Image (tube, rainbow, N blue to C red):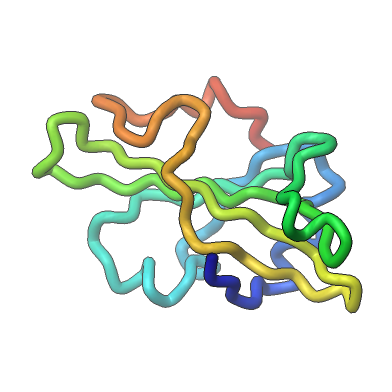
Length: 120
């Protein structure tokens, strides 16, 4: 798994809120801004007790980022990946590489609804 530094100012206020936030496009990663397929990024606190066994002694799992991408070539064109956000012992935030293991599925025929999210 590859880890990238996550912006402290974006993560710190979200981790204790209990809400899901849609990131404004200005806060998207550079690689996502260059693609026409990304529709939105949602960030929320990690579920209580969720962690990666390999990180338990060095970092706390504090949040997840859910990416929504639209690919018209796919039969179910809405694609979802999540990224883990951890906080290291020195207080820095780090983002994982993408995971397709999304609770509601990687490919959907319609986008997830805002009503299904606890938006802040």
